[in-house]
Image (cartoon, rainbow, N blue to C red; front, side):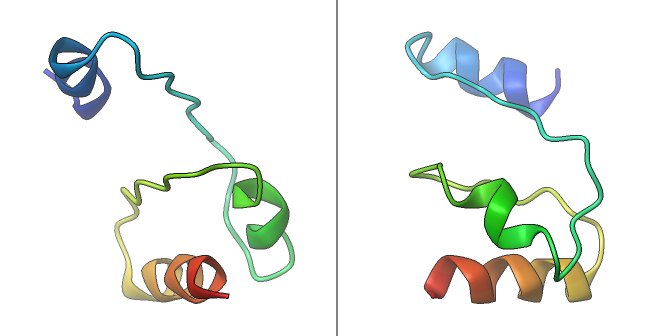
Length: 57
């Protein structure tokens, strides 16, 4: 079971929007600015820190 299915089984009212675009410094804010909750499934620290910095801002 993947993370999306796991969360849907917990609460079917949750809307998932999967982003399959490479996150870079130039597009991170644009990609995540319209969301209330960001779930980071990235596999490297550079991306995790970048997402964290934009979320904190």
